Length: 56
Image 1 (tube, rainbow, N blue to C red):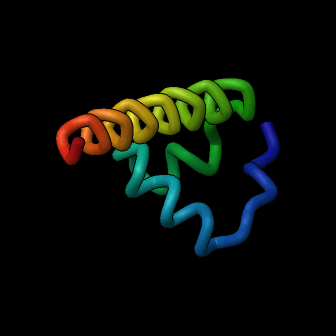
Image 2: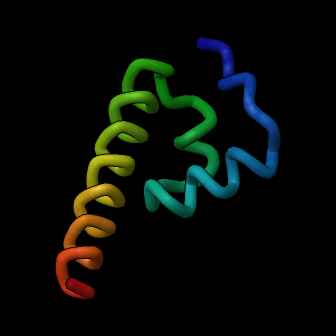
């Protein structure tokens, strides 16, 4: 399998956000990476909505 075609900076940021080692991220199948990114976005959205409700 070919490594992901993303910039080194993006790879580092994704590895930190997803809490996976950089080497594992670079060899992760694209469909799994996309699924994890969607889960991360959902968590961020829920956290943002909770913070907005807290401010009201």
